[in-house]
Length: 547
Image (cartoon, rainbow, N blue to C red; front, side):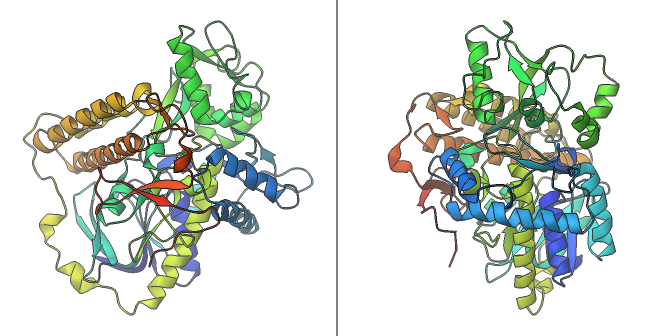
């Protein structure tokens, strides 16, 4: 059993910044990760693009107008402004604190473009950043618990969050953490899809928040695909497309040239066009980097990819190589997640969300796949959640350890059996096949969404009745499969309920945008249930607050 003021679950950029901010506010902090804090999660594998508006160089109005345009009526102006202004201040703070940021010879921040018309990003080697930040958090007195799987958020008699429960995935030790406030920064859900660095997030934070009663939003946009080589995982697509790279079909045609911003088109546009090329017989699709001009960035910012290329027989830059859409689900540049207000609070008292765990749709709306948004969002929401969680913890006199002690020990591990024949990993792989299907998550229809839901229910029966759990790592996989299945069902149901085509949500049976749904966000929580979603009508100038 542990006790703390602020608990942070998940140690990517959002989680680490939340922990750092809360500790700087004078609060005792525990940071938990199911792997090793600083080397797990998408941040450690990212290409280092932090979307960054710079006031001396950019027009705020131009940036805001562009993001409201691509959000197609369901993002919020105040949130867009907050992202730009707050993230710039955080970047400056990281710079002043000595964290490495690429700069020009005159000392200004080096920025590069990516997917989308306005996606200027500062460049930070994120693996290096995570390693340095882990060391600094330890120096600050933050306790880090590695290899701990959190399975449940616990609430007190006043319906406020008072901590979590989980287990050590190495030895099975049961873990109780009493906390005055809790920040969920456990990422999104990739269904262990085939994209580099994203195959570690399985929706744990989303479903824990959902089960605690928090609102989730934009789940129909939990369908992000990036692009990878077919031969092996690669990343850095935004840099490739912004600096001379392109996707070509088997005829050698650069088929994005007439779409949106050409090779820099948003991710959902690029991937949909890939599907269409294959549909009309022009596939497969290739990544062509013969004109790519920034090879030095790969060495400096993407050490994992650089190491892979050194040991590969593929001519990465000299010849086109077959590419595929790589599912990342609600992770990365998806809009889906837990709905937060402008202080990082969820709709549950004492519970906060950051990073991919929190809904980026407040900023991106209907657009899926813009470069640099994810890390900027992690910065801002991590800072907001850490600051607010610290203030809330300060206002509470005592932690609720007595309530936590009264929890029955058998609540820790929902699944205890081991008589089945199917490893939970196989359930996750089957689910990844379902959600990674282009005709379920890219081009949608009622019939195919219903069919996917039926297959998810079948996998759920297998998971509960025929799963084989030999050790605590298998138990972790079982929980991952359960959470991923629940995330899939919420995403599929949300896709059914938004009966229109808007941004990255394409419905063959509803091909037009429904203007009556402008400024309406699809929201669900456990009280309304997965088949009774509510539309939350908002104005662009309003931030969310809960009474």
